[in-house]
Picture 1 (cartoon, rainbow, N blue to C red):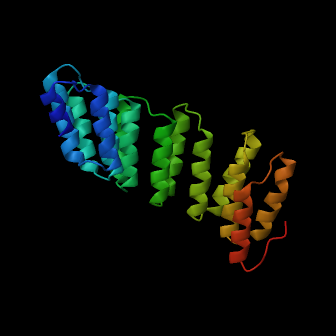
Picture 2 (picture 1 turned 90 degrees about the vertical axis):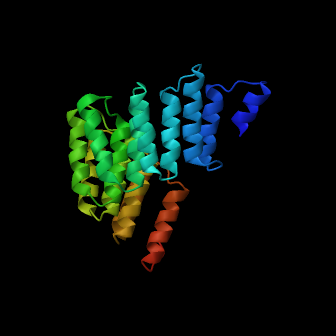
Picture 3 (picture 1 turned 30 degrees about the vertical axis):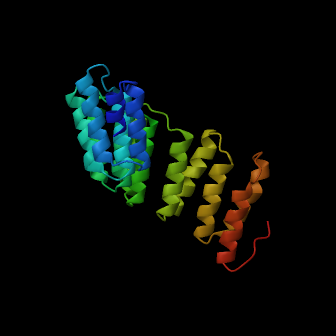
Length: 248
């Protein structure tokens, strides 16, 4: 309706920013995604002045993913390729993330395998997204294999990668594996901030290892760290659920 009015009045010719705004409307749920997406793309092609680029297509894909309309997202992705607009790694990451959140992990892995063979090169975000998706579905062994692939390709895991690994292992009930990896991180010289310690303290409390949690808390000052509000909240919640009040 807005585009039609603009064209009739002749006061303003919609440009790529206009179409991106329409895409944002769709992402926010203020307009119907199917209508806006395909109307915008159709008009851009008909005008011939502005050709949708990788940013435009990716924004539209992301909007469908946010509304869990994965088949529509894949449709825009395929249209993007058909129109000779090559998806970049961000385009793939957006689609992989959508599949993971929709718990359609096999399709996310299929996309990952595709870019591993033909490009673009997966980055930290790609691996982190897949790891989170695998943990959510309890596929811990697949996470370990994926991390191995990441290292084999010479990609250095980020702090986010390690946090996903630790948090996922604790939530999956793999206490020994989580602590083993945490120890390896400490020994490697990786700079571990309070967020790492909060994850481990939380994991220990939820597993009922309150004394170990208190001991790790006491190590914070030795490692030059200060507990934050989350640290105290984790300890209080953990110990209260365990039937005691923490004395740290």
